[in-house]
Image (cartoon, rainbow, N blue to C red; front, top):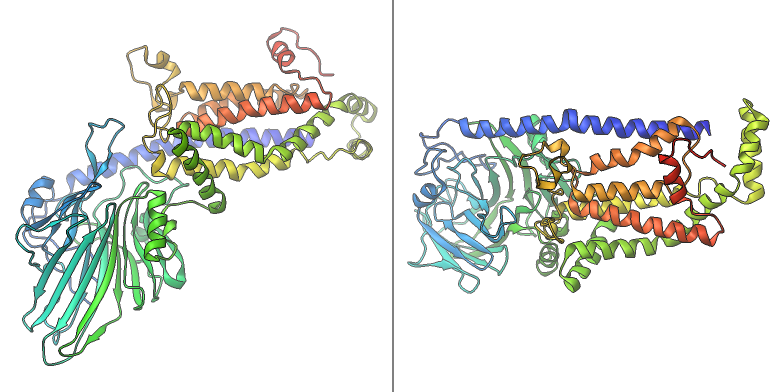
Amino acid sequence: MDKNRNYFIAIGLSVLILIAWQFLYINPKMERERIALEAVQAQTPANTTGGSIPGAIPGTATTAVPGAVPQGAAREEAIARSARVVIDTQALSGSINLTGARLDDLKLREYHETVDDKSPIITLFSPAETPEGYFTEIGYVGDASTGAVPGPSTVWTAPEGAKLTTATPVTLSFTNEKGVVFTRVISIDEHFMFKIDDTIQNATGAPIALSTYGRVTRFNKPVTPSVYVLHEGFIGVIGEHGLEEVSYSKVEDNAPAQPGKTTGGWLGITDKYWAATIVPPQATPYETRFAHFTDGRPRYQADYKQDAITVAPGQTTTLNNLVFAGAKQVPLVDGYEASYNIPKFDLLIDWGWFYFITKPMFKLMDFFFRFFGNFGVAILLTTIVVKALFFPLASKQYASMANMKKIQPKMEEMKKKFGDDRMGMQQAMMALYKEEKINPIAGCWPILLQIPVFFALYKVIYVTIEMRHAPFFGWIQDLSAPDPTSLFNLFGLLPFAVPHALMIGVWPLIMGVTMFLQMRMNPTPPDPTQAMLFTWMPVVFTFMLSSFPAGLVIYWAWNNTLSVIQQAFIMKRHGVKVELFDNIKNLFSRKPKPAE
């Protein structure tokens, strides 16, 4: 019993330390970082000299941005300063910059910044001249014998009135001074995948050699710092090197990450819900780099450079790239992996360590959503399925608890008999367990096995875009965000804002009540320390989960409710009295009923 008491004390102290760490250090640190980042973005000196394109590709010189405008200039002004081809699909709006044939103006029509459909739509790409600059670019590296090759400053030619739609690809062209003709056909599907097919025609009298490169570059990073359960930053499956996830801070503090030369794969930059990636030609070896550059404007860049190819005189060569730029919808990402044979493209979504649990759980929830049209209902039904799968283990857990409860009188007699003789007490307890055929640790295994399931569900709710702005019922309009109500302003009846640390909403309170009832299914421990932890644990978890996504809190409350029903059923089946109401009555009575 002393050993169990120490376990409870350790657990309680750990929880209190984590909560204190979150509220006293992590939350203030995140707020300071957010304010500092906004200040840096607002005070960055204007780029009136034309600036440099971020991060030269290996083997190329840094090239100036033609017609650069001050960084503080409006996004629309920066877009208007260059010739462009309009992008117009059901999912995307924006334009292609003919200087560099760069994708640097892209908005996601189906996604808004808030749950209000009248709020601005999400902006993914912006011109390099703006503070929020973010773009992708495909170009070439040549030498003196090749002549000028398409790069950041190359002005491509497009047919008059060209517009990129799902039905009308756009053809761009560039011919250099030596007669090498570059033709680029850009097409887009109904979602977020661009195909970039380049044809190189060598009209010179000698062979030419050149390399293709691609890059995803951004000048800022998310204002909200990443959390430990989610990767945001550089990402890619680099051939035989496999999945590479490199944080912004890692390249800020160290040299560029360079996995090494390989073939096959993809690379780019990922946010929580959005991503921009390039899939290079899969048969030609290439080198990858994830880097942070500080010359001029700080910026982050994921790029690749392929080995040189040779085009004989009078011959033509075709190269194919894919660019994904948009929302990380699970069925869509999986579909691209299958249809374009992109290696492990589904890892663009951060399923985490428990990938083998997390993704099937999403599939189950998505199935229920497609049937009922509400992800909150899907969470409730998924919880029932999970409880059903774990019922045999839970049955053993509660049966063990019931049997332990049956032998409580015998254990109390043993305490009186052995007193301070701990060794004798332990031996007598083991003999009693053997006689009664009780495994004292049987009740722990179901809890341990359910931890990965709980974490997997947390990942599903937190990282999948399908949960973003997904409503439940009533005031819950976004299952991926915390409950917006608070006890401390009477759930909005009082006209004042509540500090973040005191946002204890309706669903966290419901969860706390269900956890309280679940813990009161068993008698209060006789040890005062254990009893204190027993009493205060629901309160601690109510505060701790108040900042969690509402979907997860709803899951926990519903799971607790099902657990209470399940435990009561199993205890009755084993002939053990359900003392829930007696335990609650004893808790509030002046003279608690002594433990039997």
